[in-house]
Picture 1 (cartoon, rainbow, N blue to C red):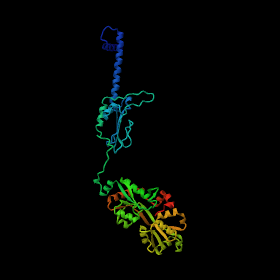
Picture 2: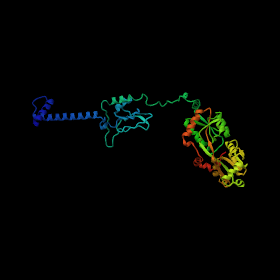
Picture 3: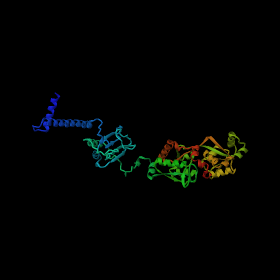
Length: 438
């Protein structure tokens, strides 16, 4: 029965290809079988082609795998899509020709990761990257293969790109100009001139501020430059002030925008200017002549304290500085002698002209470390309950600037210094007598 069915089937097929009668049965049978094979092959090939186009994954034949358009578009929902395409379809979507390989990147606030099924060329922070290679990289030993896309792919890509922004890339020549009307007058002035003026005394006090190899350096200088960087302004240093009090007055007159230079936080200065949070906290200290101390019976902390409070000893300070005021308040019976500079006061102590010199612990440690020969005949005394805090001063005409500086100093611990940290970072200055403070 199967034989009769096959004979009929082949006869019908043969009649489709050979309409004339009279051919032998064997010839008709042979050609019928050939036609049947061709028909079956066509049906099978058509089925697989249809399956490839309609599968859920949208996979293409292997020859199309290397030609792709990757869209990682930051639409806010974290979706990344990978759409296979051909160079011709890419040319339709990007407005170029099929012979080119355009690459387009646009940065948005939310980076997207590439699709796991396609290797993306996006860099970190790039939410949109379109890449369409024009040729297929052939494997070693393999011949180059051309890419093709199924019908309708170009239409899908064109539809997808219609949802993209009109101008995904900003113009390189465009400069964003801030709306100055939104800023307070003091910030407007600084932004308009493009720089901030920082007043620093015209003498050196290492390691806070000093010149080395013709360059202004030090912890205070670093802080000033950091403030300028945070404000996005150039820093210009003004060293017209010959004394600390003169620098305070220049800031009060708004001749400098801020004043910095190891300036102690005191009430008289606060009456003129705004002081930032303390960025340095030193203990107050004395350096005492051991010989004179023994002559007065000073042997321990209690006896030294009694001498300082009750005896008319000579204590040297920098004249018209905060320490002249500190000495008169803390040692009411002492003779407070103001010297033109700290080096003058130090030399007076070395010559035995005064009982002690008075300043912050940092300067006392610097003398001991840089001039160890004096340590044999000098004794240092630190007061745990007497603090010397330093501030950055800002004119009262710059209230918003003062507010910004306060937040910068408070928000970054690296802006705060201690004596130990200064010694660690500027040890070579503490041991070099050529860098003594003035």
